[in-house]
Image 1 (cartoon, rainbow, N blue to C red):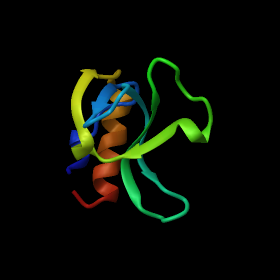
Image 2 (image 1 turned 90 degrees about the horizontal axis):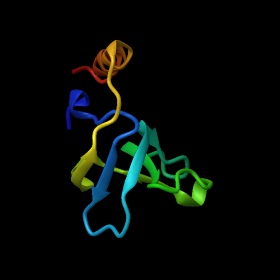
Image 3 (image 1 turned 120 degrees about the horizontal axis):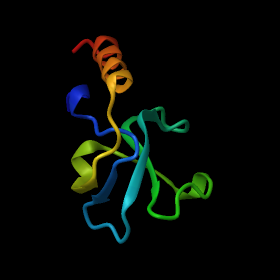
Image 4 (image 1 turned 60 degrees about the vertical axis):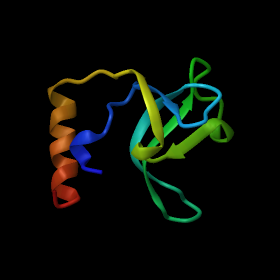
Length: 89
């Protein structure tokens, strides 16, 4: 997926076959054990972060539905432009 398609932090989504919604709290995260990179990290919504056991790494293509799109401003636009440069897009 292209970096400019990343959802903003604060977005609430449903993953395919999920039982609860997740809220995105980070983008382009790595699994420290496997070093695999994921598009997002999220926590259960509405509970929020209850520790590492309740944090979920997932890819953009795993999203079935976007319930709410998070906040976007000029600072986020600049962040996405920097990511595009970093990933050579």
